[in-house]
Length: 565
Image (tube, rainbow, N blue to C red; front, side):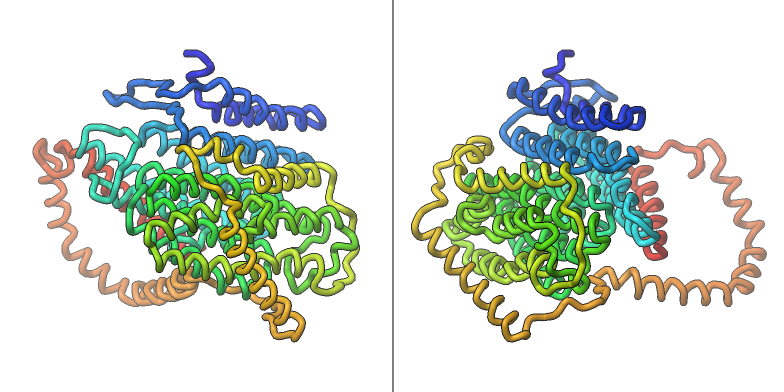
């Protein structure tokens, strides 16, 4: 097997194992060289299915090279390079090791041509990425990491069992278009939906990302959810149900983002909002919509990582990203301020910035496809989300003078932010280079007069509303508060109900014990009978049934643990 038949993700995964053995400048050079080598590896791949192995009679494809896998692998590798540069100031090897292995696992999943390889990489992304959450300081980071890990493992369990049902129903583990009518389709759909942060399944995202370290949040913003977007596009393109789900994703985070005080949590809700646009594009399923989804995933990784990097630099220098405690930092961190403004302009979709050339493709596809309600919902979400997006640089750098003075961000952070900023502007000015990477041929022209004028009108009106509210002190102030999302149902209500159930159980323990003692002999006799060769405990069980019961028991345990975390 040649190197052209190996997944480029292996370069990062295997290289991450050597990171703890290196020190100082050698480690820094090595961390940068890993994604550079990965980019070189990507450049020599050629279309087709490679790295085919046989396992238990099944054909596993570890390297499927086509338009979809290449566009996501390119941006994942670039994100790994930017994130590794951003992390060079960190002395301990944990974050670099976890980050490189995490990025490599995501790239491995993108190239997976079968559901089993996808599952292995899917779970590896969960195990490695939780290290980045735990790298944050304090008990909150540990608890958020445990909740994050439980949710991600649950997603993998659903994917695994869905794959088994798919195998039983079709005799194949091939990862192509699945659809909801396929055997195991709903389980796989929910598994992808958890990782994509569908409504009511999304709370792990604003819970875990703000608790990660300044480096961890940058890695996390690039890979997990975009891997889910890729998986949905590969397996469920054209599924109508995704359109209302995507519109809901784009709209519901607005309220939480507006009232949040933690600026990294604002970015997490904004991330969820942008995912909604991609999910709508997948649901529409036309070539323009799918191209828009892939393009928006690329640009989103760039500008969202830029925003997380700027807030990470503030956290590193000042020690907080609470909007109520910040302001006036443009005096101390002018370069970081400029980079943050570029990120905010990109996510808002200003012309000449990368968000404009990708988001407008999805909006145009919705309009041309006759999805009037979806188009209106996305327009409303884009207009309203402008306020939280612009509030991040405003609260951190301009809103007031907090009196905090600090040094500019370290040079490695500035270099990483500079690369992202250049790409955000470069793609916005010359989108043809991005369009050339997309899965289908592109004839779309983003800089038509109608597109530019419509977007500028939307943005200028939103900016005017924001300015008037701020000028008249009518805008919601940054308040010191903790806002629970729908996870209140299990983190507060669920925990309280479990406590009541425990009290009831203890009070009834005596009666239960008497009943168990009275029936012990009959139960023992029943167990003895079923231990015979044809008994329930000895006879052979179908693999699918056993997997179902194992999954249900493990899922029950994880649910109980989640409530208690």
